Image (tube, rainbow, N blue to C red):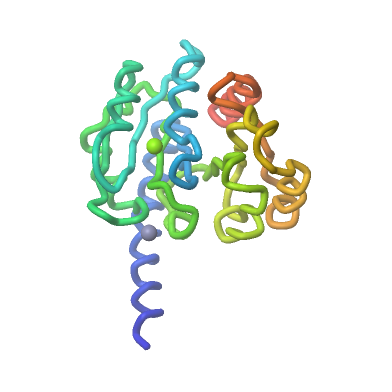
Length: 216
Ligand code: MG
Ligand code: ZN
């Protein structure tokens, strides 16, 4: 019976650090996005495609969250941008204290955009504020078109939804309109950006949306 107060305390402590971070990011003029999604949805791939295409328009830093390994951070580092890996040691989400610690070894000065790749999970990352401006959820065609209605706590909290792997629509049963209707019910304000990191289709719309976040 003590479980609920303990959870609330954890979240309150997290929110206090997240507010500190939000002030720091505002001071630095840094746009920060918390990128969430299931394992394999394409979070790292989207960050890589973004880094490849963005050129000098945005100066990006990256924080990579994973249970274990630095495989994703190595992929990101190969693009020549500052990146820090957080290994949560089994924890299924990032929290604000982990971001605060990561910032001690990430040089964000002169950066205009910080992308935080959360642990692959559609559940608890919804509850943990990292001081970001917005959460972005990446969903992908093989996961099925019911994700917005099945994970409302996540989809209701995001500022944008990316639907990745649309090149697979011809091979997989997935009703884009059903996905869109589900999202509309849960979160009518979040734009839906359909793309394929594999073929590059839709990436321009994603980059245009990103640029608006940075200039906002
Ligand atoms: Mg990844
Ligand atoms: Zn978790």
